Image (tube, rainbow, N blue to C red; front, side):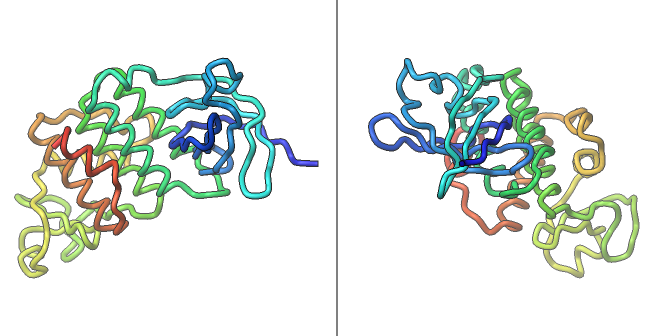
Amino acid sequence: MAQQVKTTGIVLREVRTGESDRILTILTPGHGVISASAKSSQRLKNKLFAATGLFCYSEFVLFEGKTMYIVDEATALEVFFDLRGSVEGMSLAMYLAELMGTLAPEGEEADVQLRLLLNSLALICRRRNLYQVKAVCELRALSHAGYMPDLVACAGCGCYEGDAFFFDVAEGRLLCSSCAARAGRAVNLPGAELSAMRHILYSGDDRIFSFILPEEALRHLSGLCTDYVTRQLDHRFKSLDFLQTVLP
């Protein structure tokens, strides 16, 4: 008899198959990223319709199939309807979902990744600065996946404070101006942005969004975090290509 699994999770991706079925990619707290078939879930009158759409955070009852889970029941807990209020917000949500689907583990616990994504989507719905939400989610997600940069002190000489610091995106390390000149590759990292990145990396989960930067600094920080994502993962995110056209 097929094993039953009860779990919460958020739909990261949906692929419509046949006349009314969907294949879902779901991020769950206890099983990481899973695939599940939702039979007839495209039909408006189907019991699964309201809880299996994109970005639905739902409580699922699943059965293990041969190649993927089968959705037997689903109850929506949060649908993040306000994401659809702006092209920029929806585009960012699509990118963060793709990023989390790439970074979160399969078959392992992913509670921290799930909470990070849920909090990020909630802030997008509340019209929080999108550059800030993007930067925090990118940097924190990479950290959870084992790509945490070392921003405690200069990797070359160990100094913690100085007039100028630089970020080596390729190596994920901090360099002072002297060591950066010798290394020959690093991006200027103003003091306020360095403090923000340290805050994102080293604060508790409930405080990572609690910092203030001017708009221009948030844009620069957002771009820097995206550069770090692309260099570390060597992966092309299709959703990022579009996001950069609406949120440059």
